[in-house]
Length: 317
Image 1: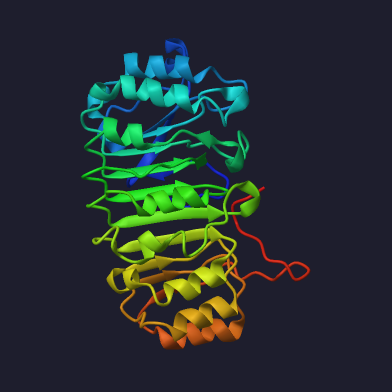
Image 2: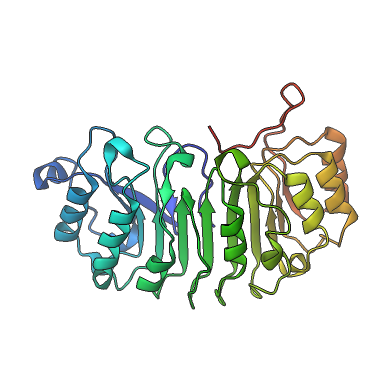
């Protein structure tokens, strides 16, 4: 799945290192050494790289005119409007869709690859990604950063879907569970906080947790969630878990009650990996997890302590 998001732009994508294309003049491109000759070996991030950088439209036009885009396998979109990096996504999506026929080899696309120093994640107001998926029928991996009013998605080949937000609207969560993605094997949702439009409950996730929506799902991430304990209790009895190889409840507010609910539910010994990093578990509960799941890789990095009795998610302001 797509690299974790905390603050930075992607360093790798689709298993490839990211090359930043953030200039609008040919001479500037020459000064940075041009673009790599082995285009297929890189993911390209195209867009303005800082507040004083060129407009994304100019960067995009130079990219199209100077790079053989027919060889690009992985593409991430940086800022379109450098001084308001969370905006302009309708224009960027329209520009990419208009050039879709110039990317016949594109397998992976990420929209909104913007670090926190340019825009807080909750300031990034994305468009519905459905039209992009329709324009690129050969995608196998797709990700988006920022709040989006996601409608039910349709794509025949997509295998991995990641949505990184500070708050994913409950209706969007329900729509994802109503999507038609028959090839999907990996789903990562950063659910976020109610203060930034999130607040999805287990009921909103019913389409996903039932296992009916994505029969080939092998990885499920319900991440960066405020209500992680209740989500864990729902996951403990969710039919989808039996088909999973990896389960990710990281970056949220998981405590002992949620972990105990997981252990009291259906068997989890078939899981290859259980990701819980950024959590509020006690040492005793961590020991219980290790004892109950001796053959499962359990990530319990970032053991945190409540602040004045409060917990907090990892990706927020």
